[in-house]
Image (cartoon, protein in one colour):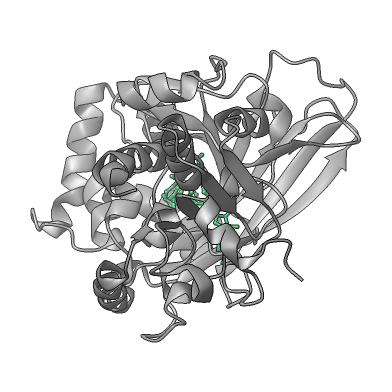
Length: 389
Ligand code: FAD
Ligand code: UDP
């Protein structure tokens, strides 16, 4: 039995499906403009995949759906998020283990010199990589494999990217979009920051608090553990589409009942453990480049908040295993093979024709977006649609 009755549809100006960053941002803006908003989420918390919670035994903040590092060069987004939380000055750094040796990531002069047992200057290293990348003869890369080789040459690509990507995507790199790998900078200096952005940091009191602060307006109601496709629910798809404005941030293929087939997604399995040491690996994220470890990386969450008073004898680590998502798995990364792209284009055409429904976010747009991009898109979407609410 639902606790809403039918005439409650009229109580809201807007229904938001999904309490992730897209949904919360849109809701916050609409509520500020005096709209009455209902947010539903099938999970039992807000924040979507960026949600975090404090581990009961150690008090260490654990990002429940994988490490979430906030970074942006967008002034408007930075200003927007800072309304809801202060940010620490955490700077993300990653190392990768390859054949029992630890290298800095992303690939920088330190990685190149360690790998080639050399002491190249920046110009020499550029020359070496350029020579290695010549096999592509200035061809415009059309897939991840070509993009990887043209960025760093075959030997570095095969050591640090090829097998990691095979574990992460289990898709022939020739079928993967080159943009996946363009996310990673390649630097001919010793700067080993993972991101290039102007702003970087983590919410001082944790992600959950940031999200709670976004939806403090009285005109926002939130209903958790509620599925939009559950027809017994008054605010289900069946009962609401065409009757009120809707922001839908779930998977687009699911919305249309997979009528053009299932879009390819990757999901992750997280293996969490508490280790009896104050420091397990010396860094927040250690990638594993070889195929003999089945996981892609190990996260050690204490390192994301060195300013906090965490226990000195215990630490939380999480191993990440990646695999294809089946229908009931959490869809995390859009695979986006050419076939997926064709099917998505069809779903997108259908989405345009759907009365009063805005599709947004990583799942709604079937795109590999970072948090700051989703904040920016939701702010823009709100600007575009505010006058229709
Ligand atoms: P989501 O967070 O997925 O929210 C969608 C919500 O909709 C979910 O809560 C879901 O439960 C709900 N929903 C779906 N279907 C229904 C339904 N039928 N009924 C009701 N509710 C429904 N970004 C970064 O900037 N930095 C990082 O370091 C980073 N790391 C990441 C690591 C991993 C493992 C993953 C998966 C993502 C990472 N991201 C990172 C990306 C980041 O998670 C996303 O950009 C952002 O959370 C997307 O927000 P969203 O609102 O689009 O979607
Ligand atoms: N990647 C890799 N080796 C690494 C790190 C990344 O091959 O050590 C590739 C891999 O294909 C991955 C992509 O670069 O999917 C983007 O990496 P990023 O760390 O941005 O991925 P995410 O944190 O979103 O999983």
